[in-house]
Image 1 (cartoon, rainbow, N blue to C red):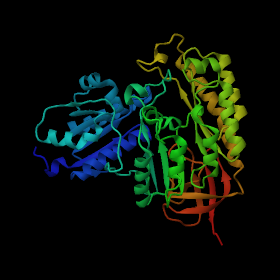
Image 2 (image 1 turned 180 degrees about the vertical axis):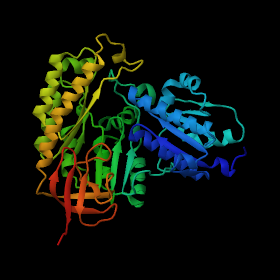
Image 3 (image 1 turned 60 degrees about the vertical axis):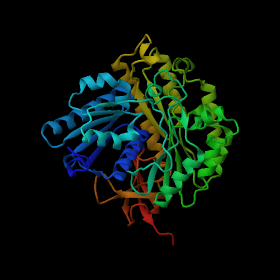
Image 4 (image 1 turned 30 degrees about the vertical axis):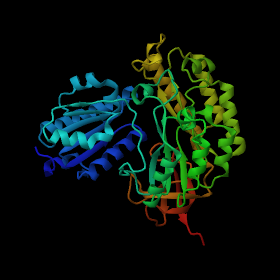
Length: 457
């Protein structure tokens, strides 16, 4: 099939996993569109399907394989002509995946995704190479083509790749490599481009925001790249309404950073800080490099200076060797701290990670019990937290109709991150997608709020 024929130009993306992976898909889409490909929203309308996989934990891997197999069936039925498997799962398992998935035509690792257009063109021209792997050292630039897949009023902004931490449960460094930070100038330039395109909310993503710039400063101590300096630079971007920070490890949340966030009108007072556990022995086993006292000090610093702060965290239950007493300590900590949002993961032993090689692995039944116990405690806290909103008027970013009914509008206030937190349902009043409106809260649920739009008059 010759390059440039209509049959090779329609591409559909299935992007799995985290927002960082989604940005990679957006870059692939932008690169392909720049070279004349059409990105379509339905696999049945495409000739090429690209599955951008996740290889983080067992459930993510299973989902990735399932979607690949589903697309393989479409190919067998003649509905698509080419199947490309890309992303983290591909990078992590390389040869094993190639051997196990004969239905796929091309395998593109997380170190080669930026070359997707060249790879497809060569394949169209008859090139027989199926695998494309390299070290994941690519960093996007402000001129990198990218298609924002989010609603036009919001976008993810990736500030770095890889991770310098070596948590015992995590395979990210094996997949994405060591920390590589983008320059502040490049990040701000992309932010300005996104805002010029209508974006009101930028969601800053990386594997650890608080480590941003460490690699640059290590090579050149005169460089200014740091979390605080990046925040100060983004805070100056005109037209931007909300800056949301994701993945702040507690060891890097300094008093100076808290003050910058406190004094900014744009940086929302939302702290997404994965704690993973609170027992000192479990934290040490996880190689988390923090103690309970240090975690509590970080939390106290935030709450003392920003009392209205929304704190979201996540915990892992069932890590190898976690005793009943250690789990009870965690459960009591969650009950005492009354976090606004809590995510809970059942430990997933990953190949080639220290945690996966540890003795005293916990049974699936115990993991499930502990997971359910954490979520039961948090549901009660969330219910109480949301009840406190009833009677208040808050600013809400409208995102469209409710996913359950087109009789209700749906939006978020600053304390809700997209896709992972609840929403504000609007049962009275009119607004357009992307509008910021005042909503008087009349009802609350465990995760969502309900209210009516009120006039500023």
